[in-house]
Image (cartoon, rainbow over all chains, first blue to last red):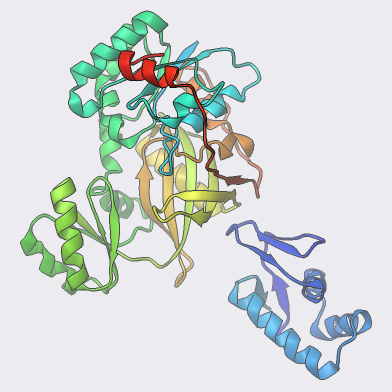
Length: 84
Length: 344
């Protein structure tokens, strides 16, 4: 299973605003996205992230898996995370 | 201290004069005078309050350097200029050639040499980069209509068609090259530059070379908003060591003496930076540099006075500039006086 870590130089504010200090790119994410990113920052694995999300948000397990994968793909497309 | 600055054309294609002056005036200890050297009585910088103490129309260098020197001598008699900071590409060759005569008058400058100016010319930059292992888009010079056949043999489309001094167009096919080629040939003459098109994002660095190979400061920026004229209308300081290292390398190799702006494209395909241009003066967005912690115009003045300046090593990341359009209202008297007497 691939785990991911955030690119260096990526600043995440409490409001869900992302600033990539190397490229100058900025992004905004919703509450769930912000939580996932914070957990990735803490080097949490996928199972731990799911467990935290399920505790914090009212979401079905099947839907969570799909949404998580979509979100990770978006972060990859923007070169904000790398697989390890 | 009386510092004369050109480039007060704060239009949608802005000159760097006003941001240079703002940077100088931001210094707590600055108590000097600023003299604006202008080419047109409607340059917006003339009508900005508290920027410039007095203004003088000067002739374009293309009208002859003797005319320019005569006008500067007249202004110097009245104002006792200590330093001139030319900020426009088109006037730099003229001011560099006049440098010894200005020194004789007692007017300092801090300018690149003719050799340094030539190294970064659009027709020479490719060779300079190749010699120094700097990524640069592939590029050929078209010296005659017959050379056009080289394009299809050596490039994939699209390509960039560039004039020797200004203007660049993206041509999607050979048929599209021809009208751009003819337009640029009649406007700027030969050579026409054909350059590989690098798809990606534009990054810039403003830097200051001390003339001995040292970099006094360098700030990297990414344009956040680009106008239809290709001008950055908003930008943000970024942390990108590769760009800063390249600025140091270029200044060291050229022993650059003055401010400069480096234009890069980061390839979407390879993620590598390609140097597109070296502009031989501080850019119009230079006011971002002092706001991020590196007052490069103020440092330039100190270097011009032969003072030692400790190089800047850091700057604030995430500092943003956003340009605005703002109508200045003025009485006709100022416009009339400058238009008729050429000074204010």
